[in-house]
Image (cartoon, rainbow, N blue to C red; front, side, top):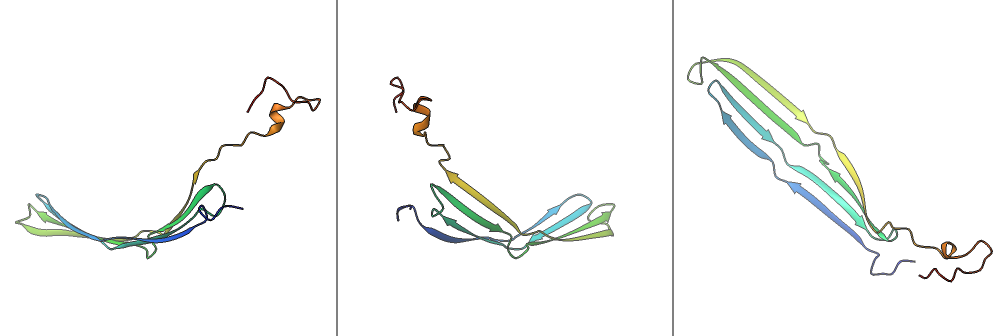
Length: 123
């Protein structure tokens, strides 16, 4: 049974603020808006000699909006075309495990086939 020092449960959340921006080109204005991104995680050390973390990203399906305006012959000219795009990013989950995954040496590798111990092998 694991000791109480290695048994823990930790909960957390991640919040990334949305972003807005504009790019002005000679014949184009490009506007982009990205909404907030929310996620969370559960982490525990109760499942053996390693730490396990289950994380969820984009829990509220982050949305982004993009509008591009094209002008003829340049930005000071007539609006020729408008392009709009809306996108929803999917939810995704990750499972991460970290720690020592080395196999412990068993006493069988130090024993002879007849059951006696090999005197040249030491631990």
